[in-house]
Image: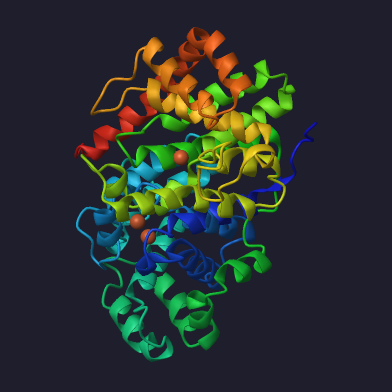
Length: 426
Ligand SMILES: [Fe+2]
Ligand SMILES: [Fe+2]
Ligand SMILES: [Fe+2]
């Protein structure tokens, strides 16, 4: 029997923040680097510890609304063309969970210009000071050249930032930054390869132990960040988690374990954040190299979730969904009894959802056809016989629940997609 997991908010957020930047070495640790710079500026400016923690939290996830590699690289330009779309998308994603409500407002305005004071308000609301701090920290970080030794860049970065005093940035914040910029440690910290450890040691995020419901709430938000980057699978995790948890219930798992299975479903593809969306969404056949990159998503899911203390079986249930009982799965090529029952359930739920859900380029398979695919996989000893037996018996019910949960997730996706299609801020 599973016990309630004990998970710290900071461990979970930092793991997620790191994987957001796995996608390219050019952006490695961008979120954490910005977070450390922002919290230093906030502290130097005299912002309270509580508010600094909020800014730090916002910084660790500030670009969750960036949905393509093109946008990711555009965000590295000092004066990027249209930053407000990703800021608004990030806001819409984060505001869905109450622990993130403060951070969501900061994210919404993290590219708002100070504009000689008019930037105190935007979009009909007050812009939090944290947003101006995050904007400054973000722009400092993108000015750092990753191939050159950092101290020789100090002067040039400080001068480039100063040029925009009053226009882009609040002048008083620049004074705080200039005081910090003389310290070598400020720059060494911001660019250290040990940054996850530095941040963990500093306890910059609020000390908060997540209960199961909170873990569920945050995981649901994360599942949207994972899924919305691809139009092909925009509500995939919502379907997988619903099917997996219902199958777990039918297999006799306890209520707590079924919630853990829902969470595992939300997180099973977290490693997809490390895959360029252009590959996930490629129309037509993937090259061998592209398929290899896609394959790495489960490896990243495994390693990222493994690093979150207390996640326990959620980690193996979620991340082993491409392993197969006959050893033909990946990435660990586990076989037979070495595959936990929870992971086998997730594998069935993943295939079940993948074959039945509609994709932009094809409709989902009909019941009979979908069942045949799943049963053939059990016949070939790839999927678990008894779980596939239950999935076959209750196919209609499982499919109805999948559709219902994916419809709910789709409503959120549609509002974000309007922005994707170039909708303007109102
Ligand atoms: Fe941004
Ligand atoms: Fe950024
Ligand atoms: Fe997957």
